[in-house]
Length: 92
Image (cartoon, rainbow, N blue to C red; front, side, top):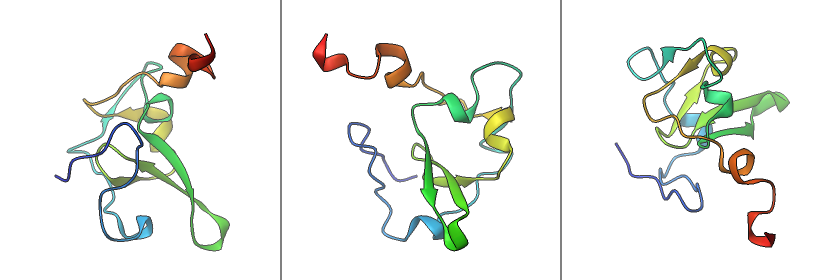
């Protein structure tokens, strides 16, 4: 697996995001809590072909199937820092 520069969350893969692999059941596990992909620090939306958003995990550098971001998470789930600290923590 390719390491992720966490401070900027910039992809470290060379290929376009559309070409990232899909995350499967080996990575994503069902979750019945608020700890799901959508609330994770590494979750991002990217504009895809035909204006359909691509759901991505920058920790695993992979794509998340639509709907799974609401019901799944991986073992690397981390609290979203914006929600945890507020929108502008540097101002505090």
